Image 1 (cartoon, one colour):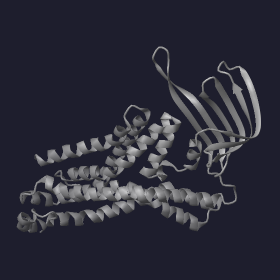
Image 2 (image 1 turned 90 degrees about the vertical axis):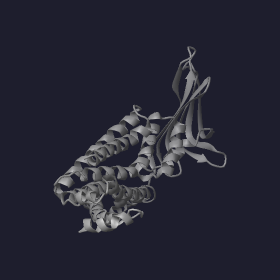
Image 3 (image 1 turned 45 degrees about the horizontal axis):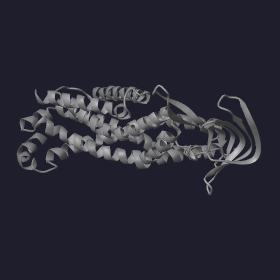
Image 4 (image 1 turned 135 degrees about the vertical axis):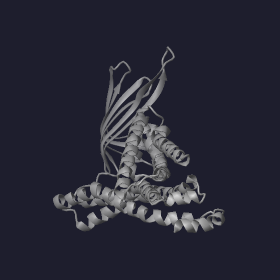
Length: 391
């Protein structure tokens, strides 16, 4: 019946941006997509959050109202992850059903090319890409951070709150040897046991930034003096050591001001996890990490930032792959389509994990480490689409 309608009206409506065929395919895709979002996000949040929250309620006395609140706050993060998977499921199941019922054959008989049929799924995938980017930037990070604060507040309400523990901040510099080679050496090492939101406690600083003078500072506490842009150290000792490691002097103090970078405080104040930061916040954190010179942390953050850009476009890749696979003439049921979707999703995220790890290890650039799975998936989708179109 649909094929007959298209046969009559396609020649006219093909000139319009949204034809009868597009409306029909959209009406078939949307219910399956929404079902996938609900199913995948429910499975994810149940496995990752619900079991842990139930354990907290039983063992730690977490109020049920707080557990429900944390559950709702964690849900947007899993909706973001469900968007690409639901796009794949919807396109694969819809186009497979239309193919098994010979609807796609009828459309091709009316002169509609495979490329035009798949274009509807790709365009809808771009819409989902925009939604994914919106959730991943504006909603999920803030919700994750609020969930962490809510849970910590509920579980630690009777304990003094520590914003962060074990603050470790190294600074490096490159020096050129007499033979022309460059070596990277430690300039300064800043360590604090904890940060309570105002003061650092239990500090040890090894300072090698001044030629001819090495010093080790051990202090009970320290805080940043914003008016003078300097650190105020309390109840400590400064050990002065010559470059040949011989003893020079020991200075004990009740209060001592030292000109050190503010970066350790910025690191302590920035207590968010990668999943709790949007791109702008992650870029700010990257600038702070670059001051410290820890290449491993810098590399990891660079890869994570690129992955935040790459994740929304997985929807386009999955939309193309699912539609291309679905248009292959076959008779498959919903169970088979769901199974194929699971295999494709698992393969993609396994590849993404491997390339991301290689990006962090320096084998790939951060861009390639994050985007290579998308490029491979896009290539596979185009290859399958061309093969179907040539039949």
